Image (spheres, rainbow, N blue to C red):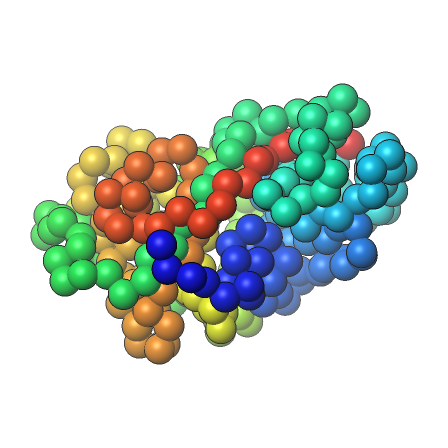
Length: 264
């Protein structure tokens, strides 16, 4: 297995701690944890990670985290517990205080693709059309697919998507690609550029259009874009559906991260 830099491994374990912030995002950094308050709605918009809590002080630290989140008007959060988290039984201790495994995805795997061999991606049908999202209408339709796939229903969809698009427009390191079949957007894939790797995030495919090449086409578009940026490496925290696909395509596992959900 190839040796990787400490910066890359830190990014792989705690993505949100090290990725560039978008307008409207806010990060609270302490010596015990990092809170990311994202501009995007839903549980993925509030993340706590990079835990370094002394043994015997989990309950007090959790109380502090919850108080901070409530003070910012948050009603739920995801806790991401990686292999470097302390104490080593943190996930178990959090569960004892009501922070439960996330129903949609209890564990992700950080995977890296670096300089893949020619032909690493099988072809996909010509019916799948990939375009970079560059206007509000495309963003709106792609965000609808994303939220539907992740089970999130905004209170006011139009206001929420306008706020999200404003963040997107003002974030030059964040790009989105949409996959269409017969003119309908059926898949979406985001990529964020860092010094260590191009990070895949925010990917979703309409369940009715899976196994039709949408995922592969979006992956290819983002890898090509990463090469244009001079960063021929893709990094992602993959869920259970993506992990076997990405491993077959040559992605290398770096670490696993447990995902917990806290309702405040």
